[in-house]
View 1 (tube, protein in one colour):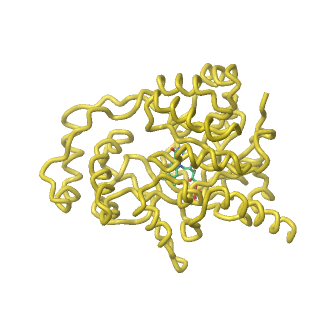
View 2 (view 1 turned 30 degrees about the vertical axis):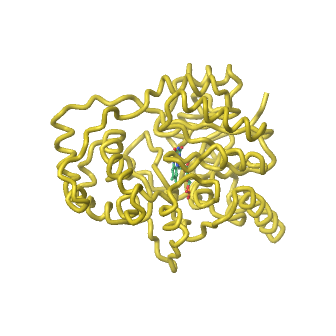
Length: 354
Ligand SMILES: Cc1cc2nc3c(=O)[nH]c(=O)nc-3n(C[C@H](O)[C@H](O)[C@H](O)COP(=O)(O)O)c2cc1C
């Protein structure tokens, strides 16, 4: 049976990134290059999960991961939706919309996605937004699948360890995309990647993966020297040639030269869960009401029409969610295999120097 140690030559995981970034081509290219590619499946139907896993297997016979959000379907009432639509009125007005469509569904059915994941049988399954039940961890293990849970604080890491996870991904506050917090308030999970690792190391015996702001091989060497066994990198892979994000979004990331300023921030305005991305007009228009929008996945589904309409028009990146981490200014426009090879060279050079 595979273990975390025998998965692949390099201790680098390409982060799962929902919303189209982690194409089968990206996942396969990363795994072929000796790191671990991850397919983000939170927004995929069960059938699409199986099809995309098959697609990856046609491109590589190397191990890869599939990732899901642990979630339940929300109970939503009409009044809540109408109130949420009112909060989005300034955005609709700027787009020239008189009405905002009500989505026909709020999110995929987690149980059905989970069954599809078991059928797809990746080497690794990773989870965020909540913790699994012990019986679900057992089902994954019986299928020969290693389990990674996401934690943004020590309490969450302890819970994942107790439930039988094989490794824990510690998500620091620098990280791009959604926060995985499920114990305590999301705004209270403020530890940086290095701080979270330092807090968790003495308490956690299973392998620790760190995520958030890791952009080059020197960052990887630093994380490993501090006691992480792996790193998980999202933003660094978002701008690779194989990443499936909208070209205008990719260009905004590559243009994000920051001269030291942090051009990212966290908001719950897009989805109802705190997430980090490039500051834009949507965030600014929603700033004063961001704490009132309904929780994920309701707000995420409601803003879906806005985000896809914006994506259909190249000039409207101001109304797209431009998720990325605080390291975005160091993102590179390269093939995924080149990025992995470069990261390994940089990591080895940094390790030799120290
Ligand atoms: C565009 C984007 C989408 C993301 N989607 C997911 C996801 O579907 N599942 C998940 O576990 N993490 C997701 N994340 C978070 C990553 O797993 C990881 O924590 C983060 O990218 C690390 O920070 P970095 O972007 O600074 O490397 C996403 C991150 C980004 C940037």
